[in-house]
Length: 112
Length: 114
Image 1 (cartoon, rainbow over the protein chains, first blue to last red):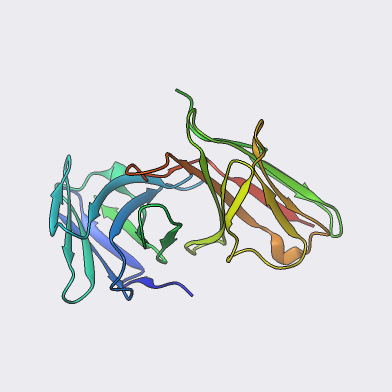
Image 2 (image 1 turned 135 degrees about the vertical axis):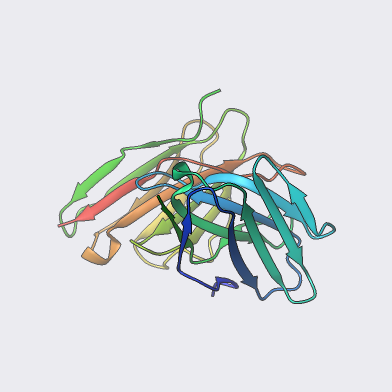
């Protein structure tokens, strides 16, 4: 079964505010984590990844935090924009040459 | 460099027919993954292939479903004798071997069984 799950299925955020999307994973052996964004009718799009030997990684307007102690992953989106509306999936990889397992997803709504 | 190409984008089949879904990976990518997605749900892993080799098919139903990634040409996901429950979006992803395992996804094939 799936070992990656999300705390909230839907998140509504005011435009301009920061968004935080959370994810819990159960396999302590997972060593690579990825966040994907999926817009309606499209395939998942890579946002940012992090390896298990790191606890934070930053990209353009996005930051991923990894807490291995509690097996928790989060995606922070700064200054949320209408174009950020999508479903966000966290995913994990048990080793670098293995399949990627997806969580259920969080739908992000941007309020005007 | 073209992305992962999937065709057809939409496929309608009657119950009992066969569905063939094609995936051309990004240039140079030797790993292909197939996922299935139901509305409002996550992507469920089905099968992981390398050229001429099935690496992991633990997510693939034992009957009616098969996948291949030949030496030449696209990867094919084949569903025989389709049933209404096969209606879903099927996504293909590809990646390089080794350190860079970032997987790039295609736009998916939406299969509708009527």
